[in-house]
Length: 321
Image (cartoon, rainbow, N blue to C red; front, side):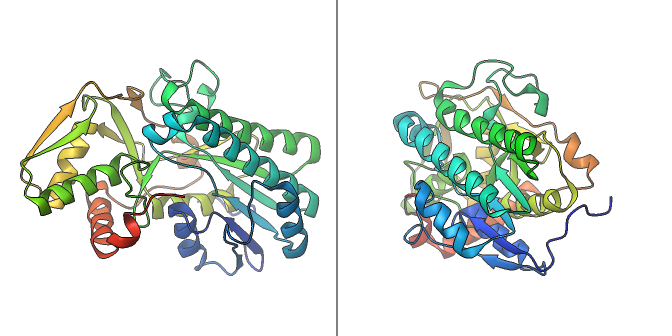
């Protein structure tokens, strides 16, 4: 492994979005570092408001910022609330990045999403595929906002010499995920539907789409570890993909979740529902070269996630606000 370029020791580290799945995982991971963690809830600071954001940064003076705060959701949420997904994410990114520059933040890491890549990008998707073709229509609003965030980090690096970097995680899952069926992603949605079907004695569970699309998944604790690794070992203009480097079909995923949940009924696919992009697999060569590898197997990660869901159902079933 290469020697660290940047040390977190003794730094004031602000995790924006600490109550989300990724933010919570980052807090768990950063507890192992000798740094001071800064967090603030939405009830005290609305990152969509420029004046509020700049005042908070001026008062707290963070030295490192991890921008994990975002308006997120699955296909249904993206497709039905496009203005929210575009405005909220643009506002959060621009306000936090400018506030970080104003107070002289030493390092900033922006989290994006693999949906930034063209719908029909060559697989696996390298960082160079960005802006190489049309986006997937069902989540283009979120994707456009995240592309703007990448470009902001690049622009601030060029114009202001700011050490601002961007990471593009693949599909994430794990403890703290959102299991609300109106706004959740595929793993928590399937896990909840199959759990409820098992409890209710249903013989069949509907799965959106054909089951043919291929997706890559990474446990959120692996993602948090990779992000800390990037903070310490990477400084460059290009964004860096964060993933497992492995994918499977939605049908294979559904069967695996059914096994974990112990649902013994049938899975019925509805091809009338949108599939999204046919395949989304990241090229993780850049991250691998920096000396990082995932540790949590998908089957083991799904079991851990299901155990968390069963133990925290009242929390897990709430919609993301």
